[in-house]
Amino acid sequence: MKKCIVFVLLFVLYVLALPSYLPPVENSYVTATFLEFRSTGSVPHFHSGTDFSTFLKEGISVKAAENGYLVRLEIDEDSIYGMTVVLQHDDGYRTLYAHLSKFAEKTDKIVEMLTTEFGKQRIVVEFQSDDIRFSKGENIGYSGKTGEASQAHAHFEVRDEEEKNIYDPLDFVDKSLLRPVQMGIMIKNIVIDGKEYQYQAGKVYQYSGDFPKIAVETYTELAKNLLGVKEIKMYFSDDLVYHIILDKLPMECWEKPYDLYDEKTMMTSLIYRGYYKLYTLDDLPYVKVNKLNSLSNYDSGQYLVTIEIKDALGNVGMFSLKLVRR
Image 1 (cartoon, rainbow, N blue to C red):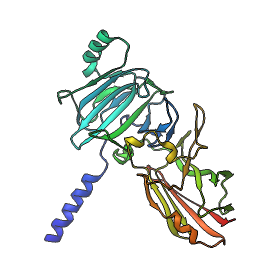
Image 2: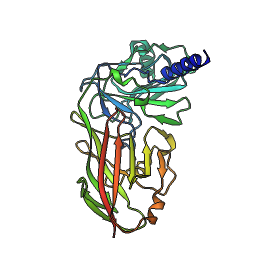
Image 3: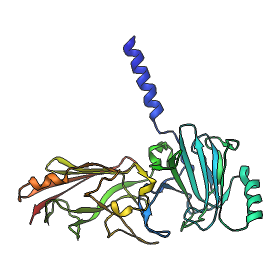
Image 4: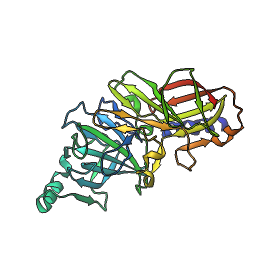
């Protein structure tokens, strides 16, 4: 009997831990992922959330991911986020919805009153009570391209209550509700000690120093989009020496994307090239394993490097190369 009770409790905890947030757009797919590199705004920064397609259309309903209440409205067409809604949820998290073309009818009177009084300037309204509530799946606004969005879409974030940390929304969203699309992980190029090469499986590359300074240009290819990845493991002769997981970021690190990305990383309106560095001498929140210093113990012979890459949508890619110290 006790074993049965323990099993039931574990099952309940497992079910409660499953992602349960609704995607903010029905029957949509992901067009940008958490912690991609961004060069918009005044300084380079990380992409703080996940973008969901609204099929390049403005006016598509954007829905509350979970039951919650309104804690902030940002009425602004020109900032990075544009028109923005922030909700507080009972689980202690907040969700943010940005680039809206207009707000839900429930908040229309508030917005109209404020814009009549203050005009076109940026207006941020903090709500101190839970009077304005939204149910899970209820419309909170309509898709747009306010702020620095080049095309209409829904930008969605998950933050803690103090908004000191941001989290990968795809760890919260029920991904079974997304539109199925064909995808796969690839490595296009590799940088070793500052020199760039086209990646070729099994090829022998040279490096110098105690350990190689490797960066990989990798993506999830989804339809016509190139998406950032979630997790990278690097093995030297079956020994895990470097491991990053992009699941959470303190806001104080938001303007430090070059801690993760190589300087060859580029973002324009037409080009995105993201090179993930697989080395650091710093204590970074997303680096879970770093045993690069131990590589000085390797001899100068040739050895195998395996790079395992995962995305937030369940895809896995395995890539290999050979390294020899010069």
